[in-house]
Amino acid sequence: MKFSLSLLFFLVFSSFFSQLKVKNKAPLSTHSMRSTQQTEYSLEQLKQKNGLLVIFSCNSCPFVVGSDDFPGWEQQYDSLFTLASQNAIGMVLINSNEGKREGADSYEEMVKHGQAMKYQMPYLMDTKSVLADAFGARTTPHVYLFDETLTLIYTGSIDNSWDKLRTKNERFLIDAIQAKGLGKKIKINTTDPKGCGIKRIPPTNKN
Image (cartoon, rainbow, N blue to C red; front, side):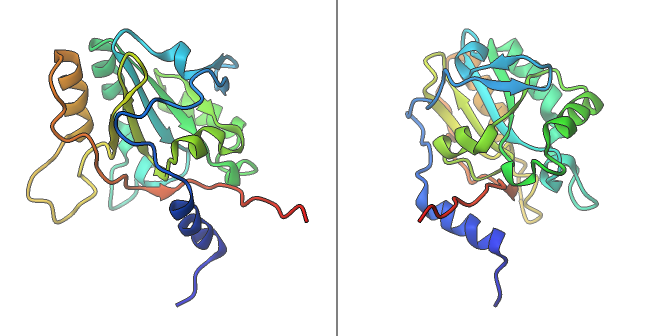
């Protein structure tokens, strides 16, 4: 079996970087990133009274934008933003696809995509995948829900709609947001993220 270099790098990355886990604090919370509105934000600035929802996203992954087989999770972004706002939780989209900055995930294309989709939440460019590396984010999308102290309380997938063999529709993220808003325990706080691998640039050999 032959592996492409990008797939090989993704597999190496997944085993090398540690994954942010529930009860961990958000790393780089004051790190500023450029938004598609020409404004810079940090996670700390976007946090609301009850916390912050961070979704690593992009312009090009079929799991985000949709395909013939899957409607695309970004179709839910506006309703998630509304639900998060109702529960005093901020929301932000992060594009860490540094490997596609010369193409589909350039800043200019991010601006166009955000406008076309009428995103209500900030859409930030994670230059050199710095935040994704700190989080250990793997896919687009990859979800992280933090409380008011920026402590992780849910991470993984938005729901299980990707699973064609599912016997029950699980709304992992919606359930987590609602539980947080009601001050209740989140029953399922960790799931496997599903989507396209984040397109990082392999480190250069300086020797």
